[in-house]
Image (cartoon, rainbow, N blue to C red; front, side):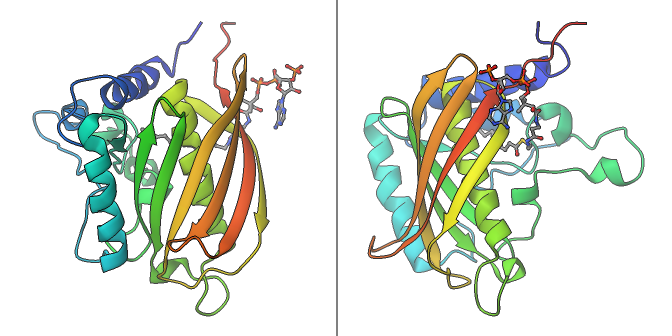
Length: 229
Ligand SMILES: CCCCCCCCCCCC(=O)SCCNC(=O)CCNC(=O)[C@H](O)C(C)(C)COP(=O)(O)OP(=O)(O)OC[C@H]1O[C@@H](n2cnc3c(N)ncnc32)[C@H](O)[C@@H]1OP(=O)(O)O
């Protein structure tokens, strides 16, 4: 029986519903923003171009927004918070009142700049990602943990759009080639199989011209039941 994550689940389900089947505005997840608005607080959808986006990621964005016109693809909105309850300044004191989604915790251009598009029929998600200067690992290269985060989130979104609220059970990543910091990469993620509450996902990470395979990964995401006591 789902309890404490029910509101979150409802939200994710509703968000999935919006992106999965609702009447979407062209390429958008429909009125998803309303899910995150309250009288005082409207969380900004961060999966939209901002001045830090390079020409390359903007071009990819435009290409996929066109693919959304027939409804086969949907742009996945992305916010600093995962549910309306989080999106309003929480009543919690101290540090926890500042909790937000890790991959949306940097100012524009400094960290994770990305946009995802999901295809419900093909059960796959494409993420265009541009890693900012605060994600540096070895000099001039993207930190492996930053790439792992994007693989985790992209795979998680692929499962969420197919299932409901998920938790990552494991993530197996092969780092094949270093990724120049600031470059745009393409993360392709798909559901390989679903066994009960387990989603088996595979991802590959390529350069935009598809000439370089930077990484490949497999992951398992679990529908996260909160067992009744
Ligand atoms: C639109 C945008 C929205 C936003 C969308 C954003 C998506 C965000 C995605 C990021 C998500 C995260 O980072 S989540 C944060 C990182 N992950 C975590 O903190 C997860 C911590 N771990 C757990 O909560 C738990 O271990 C679970 C939920 C993973 C599994 O617990 P459980 O459900 O109790 O499972 P349990 O009964 O132990 O085992 C059930 C079966 O699964 C198997 N199993 C259990 N763990 C594993 C494992 N790690 N790898 C393989 N198999 C496993 C067991 O062998 C057993 O097999 P059998 O006997 O059935 O054969």
